[in-house]
Figure 1 (cartoon, rainbow, N blue to C red):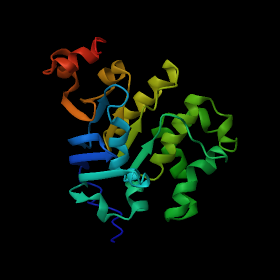
Figure 2 (figure 1 turned 90 degrees about the vertical axis):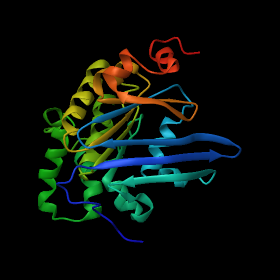
Figure 3 (figure 1 turned 45 degrees about the horizontal axis):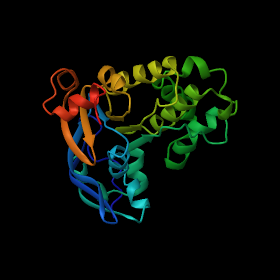
Figure 4 (figure 1 turned 120 degrees about the vertical axis):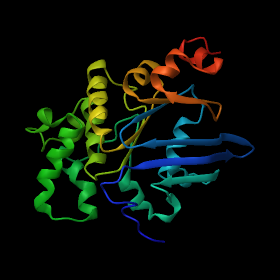
Length: 259
């Protein structure tokens, strides 16, 4: 299997695309033929109730779903036109970064958290300081952390830990960023800082944001997709979807009448 560390040259806009993605567990279908893409320059939000398949969809994009032997996956996921199965898994996950709902800092210092991944790849250690600062700035965390780099990461607040996890992904210079409810346990100030960081990051990354907060989707994304019971009900420009959705189920969900 080829170790495709770069699907295209860095100057080419990135796209990640799922085509006809189906996921089964036993006799049930978790995803039912999802086709959805995200491109560099935009944030795509995915909304929907619990059990809609949102997290499973993200886990298919970076091949994490393969870790669950009970799941059967069909369809295709393409990174810049290349099937993700053709990538070395470690190389794929350097290009497709993931931030989870619960912060997962390593039991190390702030600095060690940030250089852990890049030290496993390549490059001179003389560039570590530069890469650490760049990643922290991208996550809107540099001013808070520049004098605390040698502190244990678990001493940080919840919001700071989540932005550290974001910075840890960014230190690897991914082309795609997947976020699974990254603000679910955060206060409004921390949430606003992450949303600000995403607006800057979308200029150089393709970003997919799973959120249960429809207000966050409305203010933070360029396009929004509505999932329901494993189906993609509707996708379109966020402003249009929130003002004039084409499917009544979308309208019911975003106005709180669903169910």
